[in-house]
Length: 297
Image (cartoon, rainbow, N blue to C red; front, side, top):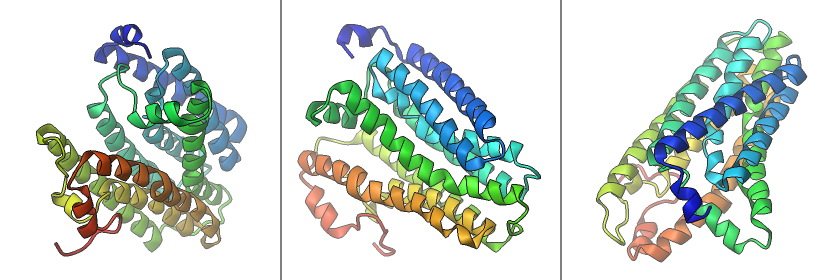
């Protein structure tokens, strides 16, 4: 986005556009899911997600800013979870538990993104890095890396939601029980970890000096407690799937794909940048686990 183009987008106008885009994108996802998959939750999930991403990709090309897609990650899963709970034949407490956990997670994650987003004058530094380094034109990088890749990963991660609905509709699922309670607890732990990690991160960003390393609170026990919380959330969906049907172990591919993405892409990129910008990073990394937190300081 050029400077002249960006200057036309104040923060207020940017958020007005984003809200409008996501109202339309959510409506598209729900309508498509309802048309193609009301009796086939897996089909509804896939086509609903894909339709919303196609719309937002076109919008991102119009305004020349890939960060218009950032909120999709936290908006669409709760929307589809609620649609599942409302439309599933004889929808029971499990589908509503998933929907409520997804809504709590989505509201928190979207709010955290909104607090830090300055508007269409800003685009995620990782996208800009990809535009500069990938051997493809900008539109192709945006399609493959910014939109398509998250679509695949989030679709895989969301498969357990469709599994819970499928077994509710078929009346073959297990009753709400201990595994469901475990899934709810795991989801709440994930949301709490992300919340407190992000609170610490915002406080640090307000007061940091060049080269400072965040090594207090949860960040003193894990270098990436926010990603740990995110993994807890996606793992909770997998536990919900097992609660519905123990034979649904294969839906664990979703949580596994998230873990692979964090360990091979998100975390290495973030750590490389920190090592380049923060002189104390190596000492911090040497004493603080990357992912699984240490219990004692």
